[in-house]
Image 1 (cartoon, helix red, strand yellow):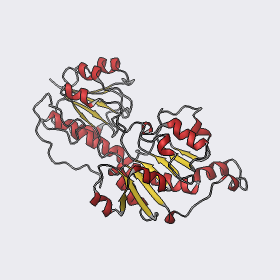
Image 2 (cartoon, helix red, strand yellow):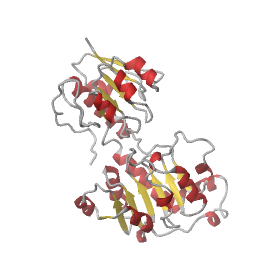
Image 3 (spheres, rainbow, N blue to C red):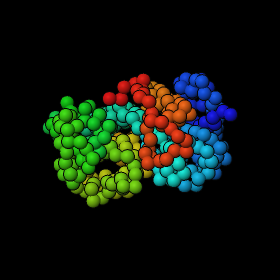
Image 4 (tube, rainbow, N blue to C red):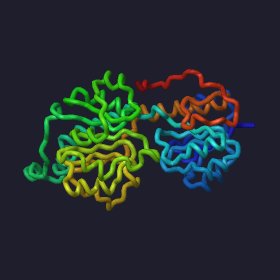
Length: 348
């Protein structure tokens, strides 16, 4: 009997587009079900995947909760094409003996690249100048610009010093006078190797000229940065977020920007996505916006396909996947430790 693999919200739909994943399943009898239109609700997911052996999903908000995990009758693996697991309840998955896996090293370089671009762009107010030039302006632009500072005299603060935070530090080290980071789990040797100082959060907020957030969204980090934190920042400081919108109390960030308590912001992620057309950020000249595109590149998408293909292959061949989001799970099948495997694109 074939293994049933259900892709509930595909961003790649044709056999040609999924050829990379299929190469990992050679020799396996796999029935790949592409759900189109996508299954987005609990009821829709269970209607198409209740008898699946593996469920694949891409959506940031696709619900995998107690109801869904309880209804997946024989599922061995739920695998996300992405890194964030905002909508997944790992405890519920563990209760039902289902492995949940994500792409733990997905798009590290891409997000770091975009963060660096946003820092440079916000510092030089590129977005304001570009929009104004396209509107035919010239002399009118300079009076609207805030003071520009020399970056090699300034300090960058990173909130979160995991894979992405470290890559941002590598990119920005040549430009900055000092880089500091706050992360309770940071390794002091890793920080020292990148010439990064580890500080407490209030000090990062009070001293830094740029504050960039790089933490996953979880119950512990939701609303991590709110009014009490933002009001500690310097009026000349810039706030950057390429992690998750829910890490920030968005109304508080709007308020500090409206009251000119900080100089500006550069944001790729938002509490509500897509962002509403009438969102206050859209009217703020001092805010640079991108539509949650920081993770995308040809390389990151291909790497994702290879990693998902390998994860599914592992489980169907009797091995654990490379990355397990709920490591305490007792799988429904007797799975051996994952064999060594390196993605085709370097992530270090």
